[in-house]
Amino acid sequence: MTGILHENLWYENTGFRCRRCGGPVYKSDLPEYAYQCFTCDEDFYSFEVEPQGDRPPPRIIVARRVDGITLNTDLELLLDDSGQPIIFADQTKAEAFLLEHGVDAEEMAHMYFVEVPEDTERFLEEIMIRPGDE
Image 1 (cartoon, rainbow, N blue to C red):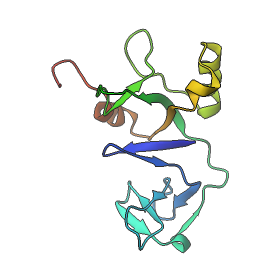
Image 2 (cartoon, rainbow, N blue to C red):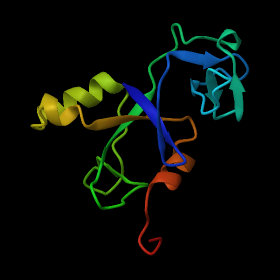
Image 3 (cartoon, rainbow, N blue to C red):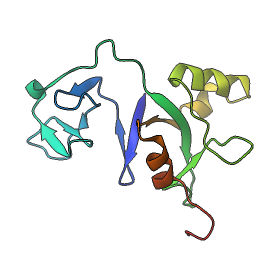
């Protein structure tokens, strides 16, 4: 399942979207609400959201938790040869790439398929540790 890392917490995609901005909503941290939209910074009841429908699947980067080491907000990202995260068109393509490169199903079960928002550059700045930032 895909999701996002927001303030160092993992939120799985719910299959619903915000009626205001059209972005994905995630399970709310507040017990009185069902969902929250990080774009609008708003919590919603279940009747205030709608199914994602025919919306194209989100672009994905692949990450995994690193035990005892904090990289990229506690996640280690799959990087290309230049040190940049590989952004896949969707989770299916990311899984195919991993399988082609020797990652088995058991290892894949421990990986996160992190949704990449439209503001890709800002998102990457937030999750990447640059030399000297540590």
